[in-house]
Amino acid sequence: MLSLILRSDVLEIGCHKYSESPDLEPLLSALRSSEQRTVEIESEGKRWRKAIIDDALGLYLLYDYEISKCLELNLCFLPSEGAFSPSNTFNGRLFIDKIAIASGSSGKPLLGQSSLKFSRAGGGWEAASEFFLVYVRRRGSDLIGNVSISFLRRPRFSVEK
Image (tube, rainbow, N blue to C red):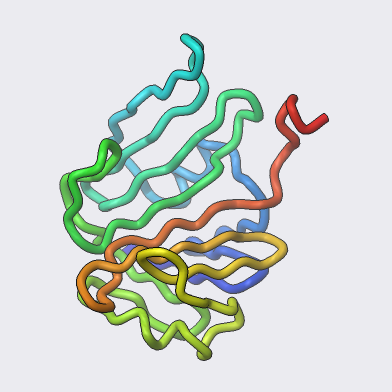
């Protein structure tokens, strides 16, 4: 079973550790992703980004063509109908520090019990560190719908230079 551990300074996927935007192929390998579908995202008529969706694992990645890196990992704990939603829910294990996150989990333990300082934001909870921006979308009163992990350490985009 796929196991991920997120702390304020590192995302561990099995024996692989990430603190910055990873290359696509090594990340897919670490996730043990064997079959994906891709949705191309264009901006002003040009390929800009793509979503790599793994229906079997219940997750999707956001990849940026300009920097050739993955920007975001999304784990879907409840069914969704978004453009990049996998057909299945996430079937691995996620720990944020030592807090187990699973389908049907409440987001309340994230408040005050994590090295990532979560606070309520929009329809969920948000936390940021030097390395990650984490957004936990809420469904219903306080159930976790999905978890988005954005890598903040990445090459600069051309507009930032």
